[in-house]
Image (cartoon, rainbow, N blue to C red):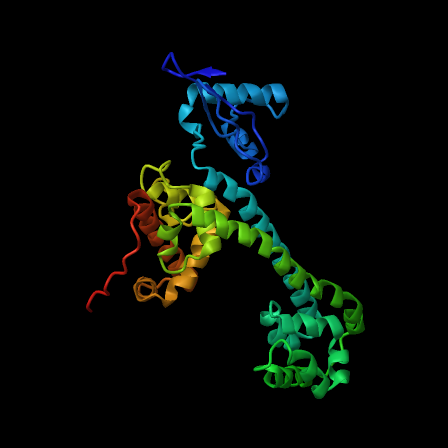
Length: 353
């Protein structure tokens, strides 16, 4: 317990918790006569600890937390529990993110196997692994040999119910890829045993994601800022939920530069003497928020204003990724202003050349 400068108020410092548990653990309950603060994560305690030695005990961690609350009150983050919708969003958003990561891991595993044994087939089917027709195809025919043995007509019959428009074209691409590799890599036949099992996982994971998605949509409809967030191009239901779960209404940030730094989108200045100077991409930040802003910037390239900002970055010699990061940084400022004022996004007319 550490006393606040005002004699009538006290702040309770919550013991540290692993940073990986913060997305699912509910925030501490507010008490009358006290101001609750967010828990210190393991990384925060390690960063604050500056005493000599390498020993780590609970008593030592408690002393570090108490001393930090006394000498560095700016490191404490107050909890605002008035927004119950934002607090409830953390659980379904975290569950949805875990399921999405599981689907990506399964897809990467299948693509890795195809790249190892038949790169040409991977180039055709790898980018389409999320399609139900491809997963159904791999469930029945997991190796290049079984695909070739099944024949064109049978493969078209498997693909057509789930992809009627591209069935024949996809099968033609498959057999073209099969003909490009004449060497059979040892161990290729084992794909018949390995691939069908993980091929069933993406469909099951997508089915599991429907439950948290329905809950997220219901919670967003009850939040007054949902319409504000989704009014900007490139932000849908999932991205809006991530933004509300990570930054809330933005009132805890004094300026637009703070959420940009929190997301790891603000360039970090490195300077020492006359030999080391410049700005570099930061390595830290909230990865979940940074990924959401990066993907929303990529999705917003269809918007003329966003495309113009991206084109100007490319004209200055920036790479594709650097231009998207700069666009994401720009959109953080726009979102901060929209959240602060509660205003909807208004597209700007492009400047005349």
